[in-house]
Image 1 (cartoon, rainbow, N blue to C red):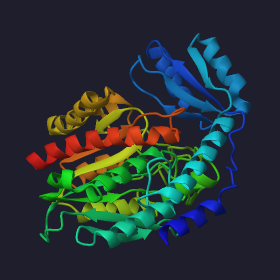
Image 2 (tube, rainbow, N blue to C red):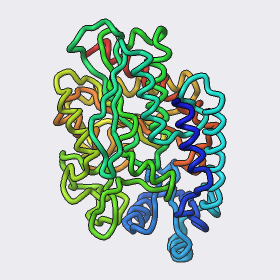
Image 3 (tube, rainbow, N blue to C red):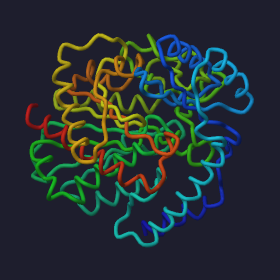
Image 4 (cartoon, helix red, strand yellow):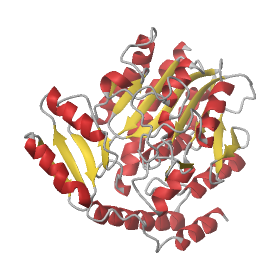
Length: 418
């Protein structure tokens, strides 16, 4: 029944391509050589018409931005006026995304026809398929898995968590809480969460030590409305979908009530980093808040998956100051980075959010650490694929297996110390 349902969902959407096709949009890589050029890019990033994919502090890393056709001439002239080096990474993002979408639909169709389990890591799955997978696990592994609908999104989609244990019946265990998909376009993040679920549930025996004295609570898609919108209408959409001012959506990772709106968040409802009309204005962030507060005392490790950039980040996001316990945070994050480097050679940068990237208040990691009292709180930014947010289907499995290596290493440090 599950596979038939997924095939029906797939076939119903097989002919629909994104209404917002990004035809003629260009992706630029900009190599700032000094602090003046970095400041210039920061000023350009204040323009809501430019979609800055990332803005690393390091002069060694390029800044990537997407620009629509009407703004390209002025954008390039500005860079040329100040002799800033740049290259066009993609001349037509619309064509790239259309090819990506067709490939993903093809892979989903093949995986549902021949899968030996109800989820695959050869395609990006829709929200209904993800929820169906959680429900299948709850039925198949009833002694170790509990699935709960913890609330509804603005558009009425069920938001579900899966709680995973070793089935020994002991209550009151400490908890690792993991979420993903706060930002809609970061498809690899929910895929990473699903792979963690797969490892803990379907590959239980080699991972049993991770569940001996801990439960894992995982919310694989925080923002299902935005996530679905990226599949059906606008692939690079980032926010939620609740109307706000003259536009729609709020940046969920600027909407948490800890130093909300102080820095790195926009008051413009049309901006990708819009902070919301109030802290916790979004039903989706309210759900995460309530889950985190409900775990106060038991919650030891909060991990939120994002993309992209190969970062393991910890508080604070609102200031360059470090919390008094930063060494404990750093130890856990460094363990994850070292495990990944040893396994695949991929390098992750470790540090506080503000000092490694940029200041951004109202994030879930700061809230979990400061208000819900999780002693370890980390944001994991998975690697870039494609032009950044659009990994190919062939990249999914390598990325999520690598991510699991880092998560497992971090979890083991937490299990041994908290």
